[in-house]
Image (cartoon, rainbow, N blue to C red; front, side, top):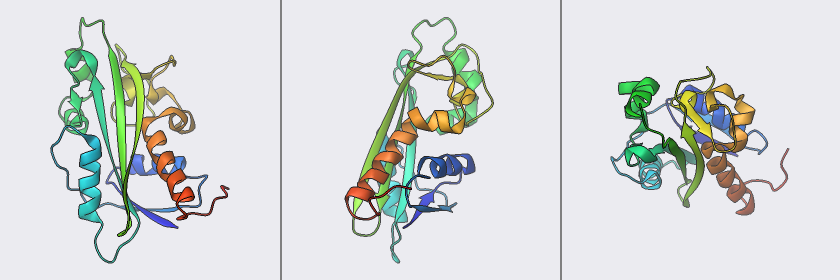
Length: 191
């Protein structure tokens, strides 16, 4: 099966490729800009984007959207994480949390799939906290300041394999791949 991933982010595409490597899915990257609604629900955002991208001739396509919810900031930046990252970056988030003890946060990724017949959304949630300083140079986005629950290092200090084992994106894409297997879209035997 060939699955097209709609993303302009090469790092994200390589991460998804690593997540899905054990499934018999050939990935291709579509670098078109995805149409994003400004909503609070990442599942609705991803589903809308995949519906817009899924047009004749129909090809299996997936779009993901990720939100970062910081408890002390009332859930900010939420689904606007990419925009906030571009405008204030990791240091801006650290400044917003200066003097704040409650650093609880979570990432939520929604992956929407469409093949012209079926539309599905799969989600993954990673609980954690925001570190006081950026650490690590792996990953992308807010990875240098996000410490997953039960871990002592940020996502940016983890190898791709370590991160994918526990990440929100890993959970969502593995759920999609398992559905593809159980629904008959993919062979049931993993390599």
